Length: 334
Image (tube, rainbow, N blue to C red; front, side, top):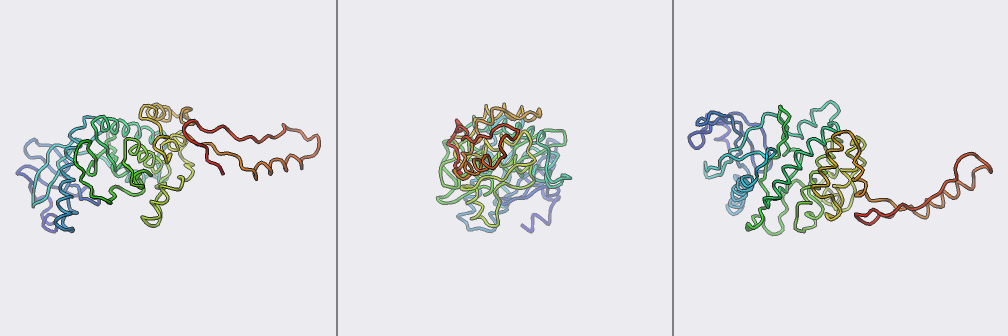
């Protein structure tokens, strides 16, 4: 670790990739800006650092994950997916050479925004690009499994790209994750993943919903004071009111349904995001929003209020009826 940090820009990998400054870091490693001296272009190089502090057995697993990331990304052809150029070994560790994106992550953009959040229409635009990337990945048999603001890159020219398939699951590959191990950012894990069920495309869409919530609200919907309480919130609690989501609010609610069968499909979500991007509240999203039944106590309060009204008072007579259950799931009874 110290050797790589100390050499910095002087380190040349595979005789062609000259490292510059560090431009990002995460739990699995860090990313360098580098210059490809053969093709004379700027690239991003991901260095796996976590393996230096674990056992040999765990190091093998981490290295296999890195190789898996490259294979996963290589199977996806889409302009919103960061391209992997090369995979190499240096210092007994794998390194991934990727497309360089001149810009910042969604996470950093939200933090630096004047209000600590971005507009709903811009969030919808970003979500539409991420959805395109996920749809291409799912069509290739790849689940991302770590969709979050830090893995959404916003280029200065307006492009939106999804990166870091480091814990992606490739359909048909033997699993890399050991039994009982939970990978991914906890507050962006879908409830079914926290429960230990096999994830599917709907799990990535749930994480997209949590990412959009963070974008418009400036905070993660389920992050709590500890990993355990965060996981409990993901499984048992509803996200707080997305007061700043505007037309995107029902879309986020639809994506964050606890049961994956209750969430919209990619096709339905695409239409919703296009409407939200145009500033219109997607009417179709309301079908995915669970309705709330009126409790007996609330009915009595309404009845008492009517009884207390002066006889002949102006105004329509109040009525209290339970709204019909949403077609995509049972109503939540209060």
